[in-house]
Structures are given as C-alpha cells and as structure tokens.
Length: 309
Image (cartoon, rainbow, N blue to C red; front, top):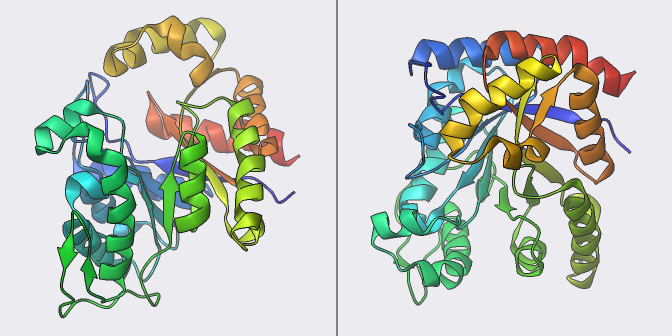
C-alpha cells in the first residue's frame, strides 16, 4: 500500500470569529504547502447554516501561492452551476494553475440549494448524469445535445491537459453513486463526514468490481476522502471546541458529530486517518476548525509521524 497523502480544505466557513480575507487564505495555503500538504481543496455550497465563501472563487484566490500543490474542487455542482458556466470556471483555474486542477463534481444533497436555483430537486440525478457528459464535451471543445443541456462548441481557453482536468465524482458510497464513478469518473471522492470507515472500505471493494466489469483497471481510479474536520487537543478541550464551534456552525448536536470528526490527542487523530488509509484512501483532506495555522503545524509534527513511522 502506498503512503497516505494529505490535502487541506481552505477555511471557507465562519465558525463565529473568523473574518474572511484573502490574506488569511494566502497565509493558510502557504503554511500548508510548506508543511508538506500536497493538495488544496475548496468545498462548494450555495446555502449553508453558517457563512461560507464561494468554492471556486476561494480556490482561484490561492492559485499563485499554492506552489505545485494539486487544486481540488470538493465538490462543485454542475447541475446548479450549469455545465457551461462550471466548465468555463474549471478551465480558467486549470489554465491559471498550469494544469494542477482536479475537478470533483456531484449533484449535492440539499433541497434548499435546488430551490434557490429554481431546479426541481427530484431531477438532480438525471440532470447530473447529463451534466457530467456535457461538462466533458465542453472541456473538450465539442458540441453537446441532450434533454436538459444543449451546447455549441465555441472558441475557448485551451485546458492544459487535452480534454481538460481529471473529473472525479463525489459519492457517499451508494450503489448508484459507485456505478457512476465506474462509468464516468477519473477518481472517487468519498466523505469522512457522511460515510464511515467501514462503508468506505466496502465501497472501494465494490467499485473495484464495477471497474473491472467496465474493462477498467481499479489502479487507475484513485480514492480520496474529503471533509475530515479535526482538532488536536486534550479530550476536554476537544469536546469544548466541538460543542461551542462546530456544532452551531453545522447546526447539528455535538454528540451526533463526535464519531464523524477527528478530535482529540494526536494518537486518536492518527487512528482515524489510519483507518481511512486501510479502507483504500490514497489521500485525505483535513480541515482544522480552530487555531487553523497552529493546528496545521501540529498535524504535520504530531500526527503525520505516527502514520509514517
């Protein structure tokens, strides 16, 4: 098994006392890269229970300070944003970064997001299937005609890599979601927040079988796990941070979140990561919820050696 790699989510969410400013994003990204994190990710929501920076905008803001780190959308929604608009955004980030973008996409699970965009929530899956094909066509400079989307090829900024950046599909591991990964995707993005280690491991096994049935090599379709909220501290402080900061921002009870995050001493955080690695994850995206610069440093010095030693 190859070594586990680490990426970071940009600090896009306001946990109650964090001002949004480009300097904060830059300092965070430069610190992460210097500490050895090899990927920077931006989550994407239209509506949320706390203030949230737009994902592609935040990712674009750190292109110039992210060295050679990969840039991930985790995830963007081609149904809500529209394949043409999203493809233009993805192409722009890909070109500006010199080809470092990985576009992870999914239809999302928020009915409120769909209401805000004027799209029926029950149409999300057929629209998503078509949006994946439309987005690939647009990135490749080809016409596309479907039930929901019709796009004529036009002059465009050329993506750095042929038909555009790799397209991964985000899925919590449902049979239908894994079938989409096997048919359409260059990688699977799972969720540490919405899936257990056991379901991710079972999903990896199922995906491998589906890929073989599609005539694809499972080794060519990697698995990364996103949205692992973490805080390194003693048990009492970790419980306080979860209760006072994270639970209000996510609008969920702290007790319901405890098993879905990585809070506590370094050994406990490392144990959670080791489980995800054993489940098949090649990379995990972590997200500090307080004292973010210090927490990135503590992760690199106190947690990573427990996994690599």
